Picture 1 (tube, rainbow, N blue to C red):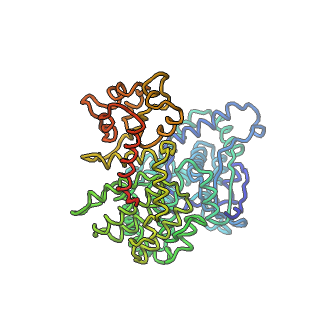
Picture 2: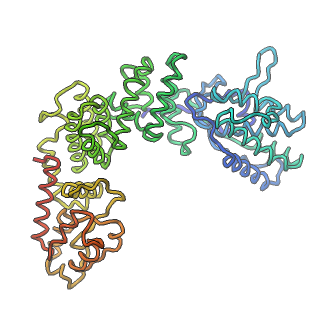
Picture 3: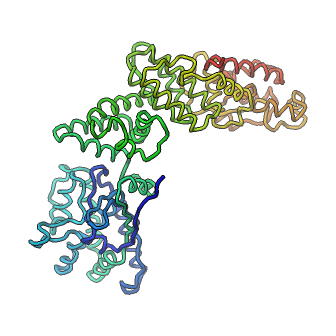
Length: 564
């Protein structure tokens, strides 16, 4: 990662809201979201800090209000707010209410922190210190920033306005209600404290990519910005005005259908589909500046032919909602198992192939059966992330170029060496491999169940039949007389079963018969897990029985994933 060229300064509010800065809230930002809870918390913090300080205003320690991140050139006041719009907006509301409640002379002084007044010469019209997104800017100017605007707020029909405008109004009313309770001297002291002793750290950088990286490290509130918002603004901004509403609705419908978090992840999958290798720069830089065909040159094509099809495919996989009159249940079942995989690297080829072949279920069942085999195999033998990404990158290339996916050298197919590594892992002390043990056991259980369990929710837990700490003198020691024998079989598949969470929490080191009766069954005398029910038919638990179960388990798993 290259170095980030930034400047950071701690400034009092009278320097923040000055001619040095003209703050613009860009389109990609979400609307103003602070409610009266956040606004009241800010007010209480300020009032408490002031009341705890009895010194003259100039002697009070500076009160830190946090930091804001800007894109700004060094010699121009224009500043695009990457992080901090909630605080800048709320502080402007507070300053406007203080102005309303102050004397005429003091109100005029406060106005300069809200906007630079037109003078007929250099400044032709009022220059507002903070300009909100286009949808809220007029409301904010008319009812907050302009003198007497707050007085008019009481008379408007707020139902005609957005939720963000309602938040602005509510917070203005809250500040006015709280400030009206202060006498004139205390009100003036509070105003002095806010303007001269309250500080923000202003972090500036001249390019967007650096600003976003700073924001990503610093921000943990999730209110101001998301990757999807930025891309939306950049992409929709390249569409002709008469078509923007249509494509904005398409975008928002896809986001709503998929959900905010999954929609944000979608862009990392799209990046992988396009580049087929690990990220080398930020997702924003790669998608907007280096992707071919360029997204911003063909924005409508990107939304119609990439964003929506891949979003729909991701939704159907995540929710097992593939619909077809033929093979849909089988395909959705594979989706269910893929979602157990402990990495998401398989998703880009999955959504690409599904989007291209949605109405060809015979192709889908074959492809996803083999993708399940590949993803499961890479997970089981613990292929590292670089190897996984390179493998799925090759698979994406094969899909795009219509290369046969079912030859022995296809990236979709496990190699003989990989098959061997997977079998060795399955044949070892699998309980010690925490990331795969439950997955392997539920796949094994599902393969021998009749009917198959549709879902494993809540997740079952794993129990050792031969306990990890057998009591001295127990039958366990008779069956496994040496420590070496116990260690050989303890953590292997043949000695492991599934229990409900409740049953597992009760399990103890009882002898085999009591353990079967007390923990391995329900009131009906059977277990909900076929893997566990098999144990009930055994009258003893010896190395020979574990070996037999181990062999049967390995053969069944070989059958599931074609490990030959």
